[in-house]
Length: 473
Image (tube, rainbow, N blue to C red):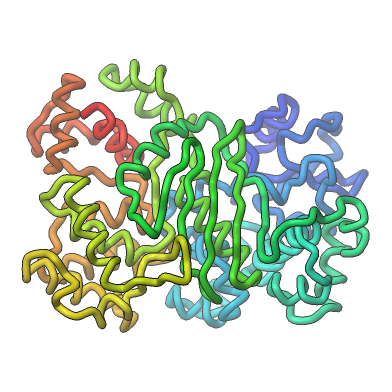
């Protein structure tokens, strides 16, 4: 990835928080790398090198700044937007695929050889998949060291390290402290076993009211709930179940995770960030949409509207199918009945049933027309068999094409899933009744064909424009 030196240096000199996560500043005289907004004295330009990833800086021997915590910066919005192999790889690494399946598993998911994948990632990010995963493991380990009372050996394996020695060497290299030294510096608080509290940084502004209202209107009893400014839900994670409570604050979202298995910390964090769209660049989005006079006033009064995404692609696809041509409240009622057929009394909040569980439900559990029931069964079987990938690391075009092959799935359903589950930032649903109603309210063309033609000016952020049309309706 080419980084323009002057632009990067100006961002560092002004301590511009919008660039946190876009690149990292390494200072050769100190051997430290920082986020652009680090409050330390601006280094001389002749002593600075810029890297596209923390892993690239670590690979060159720089350690993380203890003041600005560059490993806690928001992720680059590029990896949410891009649909190419590198973007997909970064989303999968963030979800912990390398820790669970190794680089061969990552390469197999992407359909490339390990060598070619390493070459592509190194060219873009200055580090290969192992180095990128190692940087993430170090961050996960630091969080566990500082926020839990777990033993250090237990943390080593929970973070994805293959041995205690590898864990000790990595922490010393990245933070210039031993694992026990990190704990001495910030003693772990006494909290409930399995509970981890942390801050999820984002780029301001964030319209948390729009985000919480959207999720609250669609909340499924037993799976999710809203309590004032806090949103809670259950999660299905690779090693077990979990619950999370998310509370937006100034420049970060407070997250309290209760994990059945601490090895799930990294994927839990990645899915929570995805759900709240925390890696977005709202300045870039609002800048493009605000150029349209029809949206200018709303963007000025409501900056930072995000696209609520998903923690489970299959769950979102089921929601989309049930929601075809019915109201939000009607879809919620139908989904609640479906959940009642697969109860889990052991948990107050639990994750949405898996594809295998839904496929095994009897016909009586589907309180809906037979054709729609058949569509959900076909979806569940395709996901359970691995024929359909609905997670953020999926090939967007291929997943949409396979969705459209299912009986009863049309353009609206596939587009909705692409936007919320697969993370496509440029989806428009021109036939949606509420979208057309919102377009009329804003004085925009309000027939499907006319609105679709008009919306070309909103690319590549039509998903965000869609959220604003829904709010205007």
